[in-house]
Length: 196
Image 1 (cartoon, helix red, strand yellow):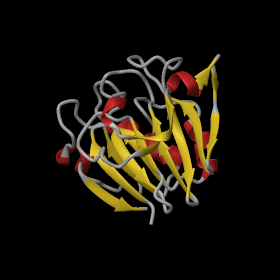
Image 2 (tube, one colour):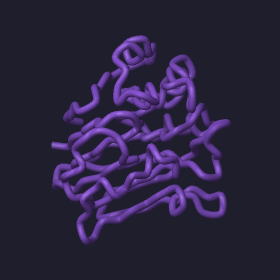
Image 3 (cartoon, one colour):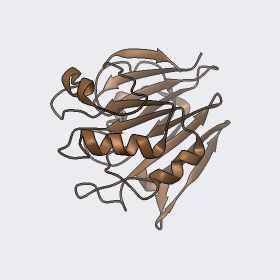
Image 4 (cartoon, one colour):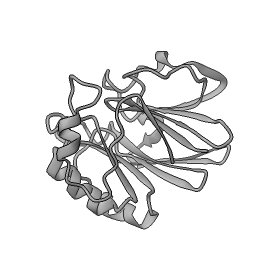
């Protein structure tokens, strides 16, 4: 079964049906012991790019914003049948020329990792992709707050919307998660692993 471990803050791990392991924005929490096949980094801020935490397989593929966004173009990657598409991300504190989000397709499941962002022009187009799980930042300090994140969740139209990056000082903020008024909200606590 495909699983997602929310490690906390903006960090999470995906394990596929055939035990391929993908880490997104390694930094927070625990659960870095499974050797990685793929590591994705949305941008180079210190709380998203602690790649050294991750045990890597010899064939591990590291994709950062630098590889994912070249000459202003968002790239797509096919790694052993796992499709990774870089998409727009950014706001006044995150340069859109240096940040990306990712749509990850695996095991017939589509996951949208928004990265550190506010609303982007591309989000409305993502509805066509029929996203299964979308993870949105909601801190309201470095990224969009709860209201804008709920608006983005409505635009993207995912089957499940997960709030992350809620509080710069905490792995998870139960109060903030409870207040998020997004459609199809799914609260996943730091350290919790769910089956997708």
